Length: 94
Image (cartoon, rainbow, N blue to C red; front, side, top):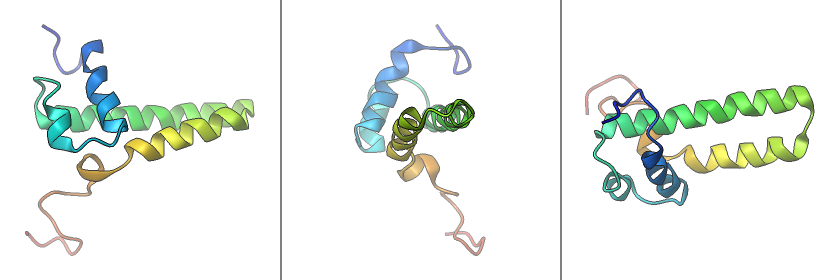
């Protein structure tokens, strides 16, 4: 059984469903991973897309830069990118 740090290509379904604008609770049904691991996976993919975008910027491929940017915008939403689930903007507990 793969740990959360080993690649598990079966969890691509989770990322795909998140990209298809499914709710987080629906996405959780596709895997046995804990919710925190799912959020970290989504964030890692978004960070990887930013790295790819920087590399494409160096190469000068504006078409692919725009496609990667759109992909990043699609997954950068909701609970996976909330600043905190427990703190308000003034750092008081909810």
